[in-house]
Every structure is written in C-alpha cells, then in structure tokens.
Amino acid sequence: MYERVNLADLEPHDVENADARVKAVGYELRPRKMRPSVWSFDAGGSGPMHYQREQEELYHVLSGAFELAFAGDDGEETDVLDLEPGDFVVVSSDEVRQLRCVEDGEVFVVGAPNAKDDGVVVE
Image (cartoon, rainbow, N blue to C red; front, side):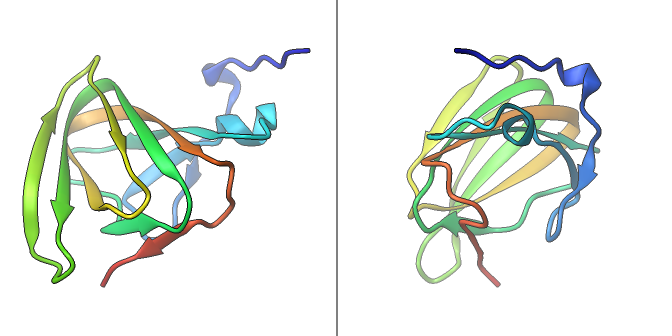
C-alpha cells in the first residue's frame, strides 16, 4: 500500500512559536512511524529554540540558506551549522536547537517516531 501527495497541492499553515509556514505532508499521507513536513521561511525568520520529547529529526534543505544553532543546558549557544540546498542533518531528540533562515527557503523535516506536539520550546 502507498499514499501520494504533491507539495504544490498542499496549503501552507502558519506555525505557533515560529516565523514559518508549514505544508503538513504527514497530515495528508498519514504515516504511522514518522512525521514529515516542509517548512517555508523568509530571510530572518526562525523556528523556536527547542528540543523534542521523543522525536529525532531529519532536516533536508530544499532551497535557500539556513543556520542550525545548538545550545547547551544553560541556554548558551554552543555550535552553528551553515546549511545549503542538498544538506541533510539528523538531530537527536534531546539536543536543543533552532533553525534560522538566512535566505528565503524551504526545509523538509521528518520527525520519528510520529509523536504529535512533541516539541518543547526553550525560553
């Protein structure tokens, strides 16, 4: 069995706590073990500094330019990866991170396992 959807057919939705719009690929396809989506950002936009309760996340840059910042337990930034189209990054659930947009673009994000509202925003 399989399911299919075209990204052009999905409506973007605003995201709470982020300067982004999301096309919820997973909502349309209903996979059982993963949670795929495409996040669209304008330059200067960002997601929240966060970690996940269960999900590890795979990021794949489709277009634009991004930074993926990491922070320690004290909230201080520890590392920043510069990301460009074609880059893939896997981040463990407990790693505190923030995706920041440098140049308008889209990122394909897959969280696994498929856990709804799994993110914890770090203030």
